[in-house]
Image 1 (tube, rainbow, N blue to C red):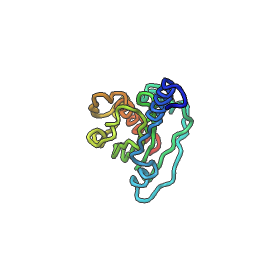
Image 2: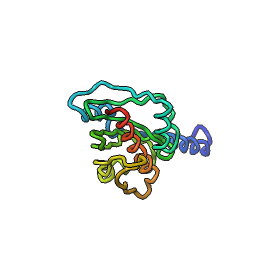
Image 3: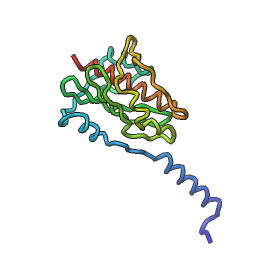
Image 4: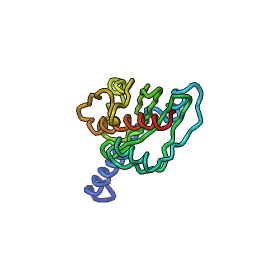
Length: 173
């Protein structure tokens, strides 16, 4: 019936299943669409070059070193949009942040790659970020409620929200 041993067949089936689960990527909103929806017209993309001082401040916000040399963002007046990534458990979560006047207007999960914790994309969670500001010591001005089973994703998005608010302050006068 099978041209090769049944044990080998099951082994290959398990490998293919594991690969398809690990390669999963849920795109909830394309980054370009997020930018288009955030502004009346699409502003020019800008770049924040990271100095030693900026990297040191980012480390205090994220709790770890930031590997890049620059961060891309979009700005029109006092409104900025940031598309940032942070590891949830093992894979990056791509998230869009819209900030105006040092206050977060919107946070959206754009691309989710983890196998657990995808509930962070729903408005019952993301709406908590509306109106957030940074207080002394780069802390958020209100507590973010977690989601059982999604702790690492919640923590990643909370760190990114602090980072986006900090970066906004770096580029707005």
